[in-house]
Amino acid sequence: MSKNKKILGLVIARAGSKGVVNKNTRSFKGKPLIQWTLEAAKKSKLLSHVLVSTDSKKIINLSKKLKIDAPFVRPKKLSTEKAKINSVIFHAIDWLKKNRSEKFEYLILLQATSPYRTHNHIDSAIKYFFKFSISPSETLVSVSEAPIKTGWIMKQKGRHLKSVFKKNSSFRQLLPNFYIPNGAIYICNLKTFKGSFFTKKVISFVMKKEVSLDVDYLKDYK
Image 1 (spheres, helix red, strand yellow):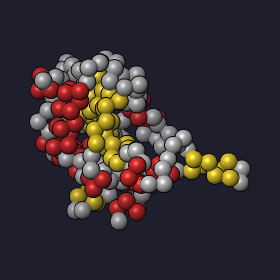
Image 2 (cartoon, rainbow, N blue to C red):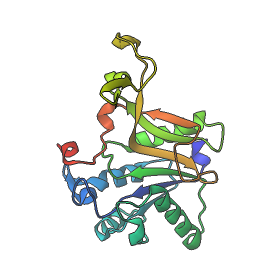
Image 3 (cartoon, rainbow, N blue to C red):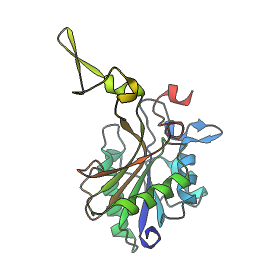
Image 4 (cartoon, helix red, strand yellow):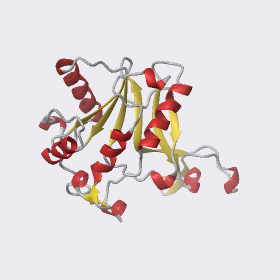
């Protein structure tokens, strides 16, 4: 079913970075960090097209070298630390509508900070989405299992501690499973997308911890 859908793979990456200088073009295991994502997207068998949104000429040149579409320089106002991802997405979609004839039904967002996310993860997530999605408003977000003691997270109220969750157990095996977004894969229907992938009905695509690295700080490289 997914093979008949027009799916846009959107890779977003900006030149600047607060946590790590030039993070997206910094070498990670022998090649620029973003190249891992670009190659994964290119190898996908289910993406109809891959588009890169960036303000970096280095990333644009690298994309073109890999024969991946990077036709514009993202505006400065959408390339700052405070720029919202949904604004970047809408800009890319608007650009396509004005400059290309090809139409897309779905979007899969691929951030450059997930080097261990492969084309197999991308295609598996797409298949999973179409297998379980029953409503146009549903989205998909990739997650990984949270640390075992997540159920024991506490918050401070005055001088005292209070459990964030109403129920917990002294027995580890009785604690519920918790999951956290790993930043690797986001999918939505473009007709119903309002700016957030975290809708009332989010399909979770669980990925193993060892492939869920999200590079934000120097410690992540190490």
